Image (cartoon, rainbow, N blue to C red; front, side, top):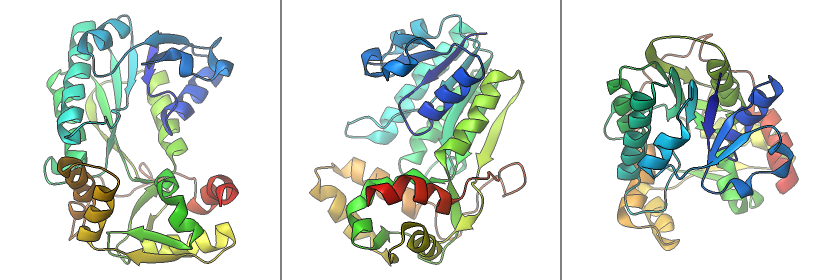
Length: 288
């Protein structure tokens, strides 16, 4: 069985790579620059040069593949939604023409809205493209990554976690490693059919609760602070993002509040074990 994965250096992809190799697989890793892969993995994988934004390269790199993990990277271009949709077309073509038996797609909670969720709309376009092939596919609709906290370390050093979301609105928070565990299992074991599988983490948390968890895990006071949508736009624009890029990010907040309820309710099937406290102690505390 040949298993291929994309983004093997990402938060999810790197954990999938480790899980597959430890399970005895010899995965094919698709990378723009295979030389960037940690040398420790090079004897355990088939590293193939592949730009995910090159349709012909994706087609060639996935020939003979039985199972595929597709993670759509955010490309540095003006319209992230259009970029995800374009990449979704590339993978759908490869799945159809190469007869890939199982595809696992890293999507997001909110993709079920199809429109109105910012950058997540691009993941929805990929879901639709893959579904249209008629091939077996699982869309992993993941909650808010713990690792997103790494994007604002300066604020955390100041004792603040900032968000444009209401501070008292609960949402699913999940460890990327738990997403990877589910993805690896789906890649390693045969299944049929199409559908979405939510990955909700251990519990829904408000940002106020997140601040309380971080206070204990980090050994320093942390408070949650809500900023306005316009303040978020201004901060994103200040680092050079264009209007479409800004709105793609802001839309992920505005589109998943005001009564949004995930299509897959929390259940024993969507709940995963790793806690924010444990993750923060292991990954955040050493950086602060």
